[in-house]
Structure formats: structure tokens, C-alpha cells
Length: 162
Image 1 (tube, rainbow, N blue to C red):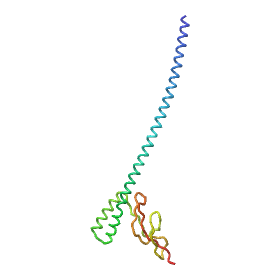
Image 2: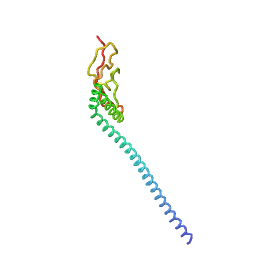
Image 3: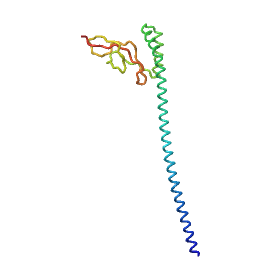
Image 4: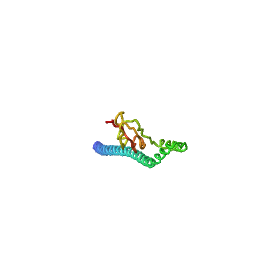
């Protein structure tokens, strides 16, 4: 009888081992599923964070550009006042321009440059013996922020005399 009890006990233990192996395999599969889900959630969060940072940067850039656009008429007025050779106005204009430069505002250089519709808006032509499509007169300054034109320069360009 002891041999039979021993065999029954071995059989019972083998069944228990099989049950535990099934549970362990199931738990390992569930753990792997949780781990892969966690990795996906982490990747999604990283992507979301990058998107939000980019979106915030774009919003700030948009606000800055619109803010600077509102001051362009003031810069035009200062430019006209500078033509009167008033040293006080020139000093104030220089200070204001330094503030705008620190915010990223840049003048678009025009005179003597080849006409490029991405930076300039032609509102007339001047007959000339020099090269064609060269800017010969700037009627209003153009400005850029971070490489983006926020207002093109108003210019007159040269054409060959006929």
C-alpha cells in the first residue's frame, strides 16, 4: 500500500506541477502583454510630448510674428522721420530697431539685388542701361522673422531701355 500511496502522491504532484506551469505560462504571457502595452504607452507619451513642444513653439512663433507685424507701420514712420536727419529720432529709431532685432526681426536688403518675388513686391519699373530685374528703388522696407517673410519690400525694378 505504501507504494500505491506514493504513486498517487507523485501523480497528484505532477498534476499540480502541470497546473502551476500552465498558470506560470499564462502569467508570463500576461506580463509580456503588459510590458508591450507599457512600451507603446511610453512611446505614445514621448510622441505626444514632442508634438506639444512643437505646437507650443509654433504658437509662440505665430504670436511673435503677429505682434511684430503690428509695429511695422511705426518702423515705417521712424524710417521717414530719419530722412529728416533728426538725431533724436535716429537715436530712438536705433534703440527700437535693436529691440525688434533681439525679437528676431530682420530687414530685407533690396537695393541692387536681383528681383525675387519671395522677398519683394514690384510696383513699377524703371528703364535702365544696367542689368534687367535688378531693384533700383525701394519704396517700403520688407521684414523677415526667422527666415519667413512677414512683409515683402515694395520695389521698382530695372528693365532694358528699348
